[in-house]
Length: 318
Picture 1 (cartoon, rainbow, N blue to C red):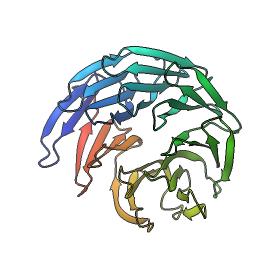
Picture 2 (cartoon, rainbow, N blue to C red):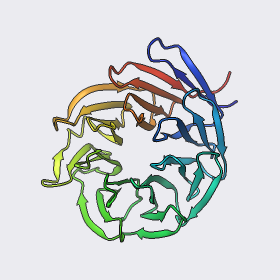
Picture 3 (tube, one colour):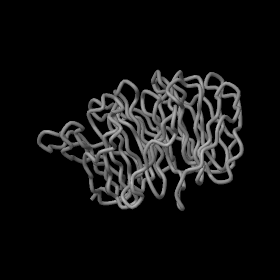
């Protein structure tokens, strides 16, 4: 019995298609930059590529020996990277699903991977380090050391010149060109364990998701921009809409909150209650849809303009 994904039409809730194939919970999902392909990584140790237009399965990418925690498309959409609990980062050709190379240097779970904006560098987070890889040949460029706890969040600045990494209650900023440490930021809060981060599209704001709060840091000038009441927003994931107007956070209590950030008011736009833990969330490339992947085996989609929910469901065949 496999796990299924149901796609539903926003307007009337009629199912559009069913994506079948994964044999366990989907842990990560990503759209290609052109929005035509969907990649999913799951607990069944596989990565799958789907045609977004009609849900046709394209390829099943096999090779990882542990659950796939993260998937990411290169900016040109030609390469897919996947990171898993087996400590490996694998690169695949999107056009045919063929493996390109395997990057093996980490000694623990690869929790997060991200391409630089120009697609030339790939950053992978694991154990207490971040590694920077040259995409063209898979060469290890730098190993960024210094964190005293597991690194869970990494993000490139939009100009690609700096990388930020988060572990425990600190955020470190690195120079991509030579791997030099630039700054170390202490995140306020007794339980400020950083789990995710994201730059706004204009690069002016860095959002941090932590166990005790969501925090916005101004990249230039006064670094501390805003931190909401930690009793309200405790988030393990954060993401900006493609236009940068909205920030979404996934708190521990299974309520996703969307806030206005374009005017720096951080005003609450809406709160979306879910039925289980959120494993992955993302805006579509055009910013019109928001996808929430739940630990309950469901993916809920919301139309971004009016926030009316419809679902993609993962569930056992009956």
